[in-house]
Length: 498
Image 1 (tube, one colour):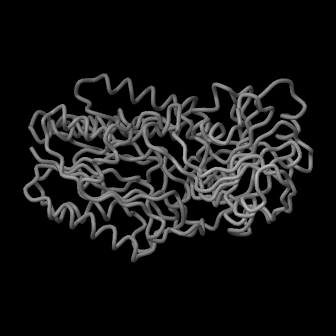
Image 2: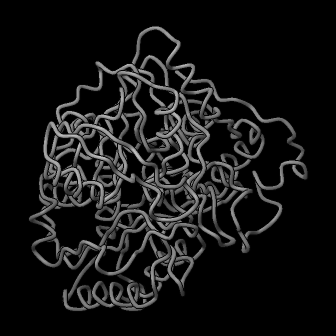
């Protein structure tokens, strides 16, 4: 048995002006794809392990990926798609294809980037080749997916701590389908909901409730897999939002019934998906006045993991103005400031015009004077439940202490999904009173065990949960949460924190 693997992975924020030019992408072709991911807990690591266990020959084609950013230019997508198709075309006789795609991709020409990939791969390989595909939790699915792919699953968790396990399921189900052990039938139902990322946290209600029901159904031997996706909110097209995939063994009626049941559950408790973050000054004041720590302040409006520029200054400026002590701010991307800190040198004072250089949505540059504490090349090995086994890099990095705040300034964007992002520059997060960070939910996997309290801060930006304030033009209406009055929802609820 021979199976081709590859993919194009991008999470696109239509309101971000962080570029998605070809120079921003990392591309692995042929054997380097296998060599890089083998032994990791990434999707391809699972594909490789399952293939070795099952005696399947994998044919690596091409994988391209970059950090979440703005709309993918037409020429970039055309170039990457051609590379993927050329790789599959040169693979020779194959029994299957397993793709690793994000699910939240959006190009200038194709709002449903993944749907276009599926269509073109299916045209190339024909109707008999079995296709499986692995996806991120924040996917915006369409009927093109169902019409072209045999097996579709994605993460069950947010933060994403089950990547390897779910990719293992995709690989196993694809192989079983090729062997004719099963006959997968797949249904998709979308409940016309676009929950913000904070409401998509799977560690508590309402998503925990939906997943519990899905997992109960997965105990039925007729069910091969269920995927309840959260959707990626900042995609401006009619199919944005939640979806429920159900795969059964040759029982389409059951697949449709389960998908509708879970979708209806979400709609009935839609008011529970509303969130109310805390005002900036109130969040800082609570953390400063309270005993113990660390208090984690999440700058959710400028999440680099959702397309934010990672140089927003609103939360940091207020922390400086309020004289926050024993605090760390992780991170601000500012290449110019890093270079100035390097020029100044460790233990020396430096004055910076910090952040606010990408756009006018996340706060202006702020003038700060501080002491350079640490300089680094930015390379580190993540620890904890996410991103294990693959070295990470945030580029040249400097830690500048401004008053009582250690500001981590980097050359590349990255949200802190691991405590290693502090420790590699000599900061012990457990010892801090306040940890301010740029992330929506992923930070919880590493920070919840050490946090006295987590506070989601109402900062402005392209990843703000205030979706109605963004210039959407192509949505299907009515749609939650844009039309809460039409849908009979009038009260915002505050989500309890651990």
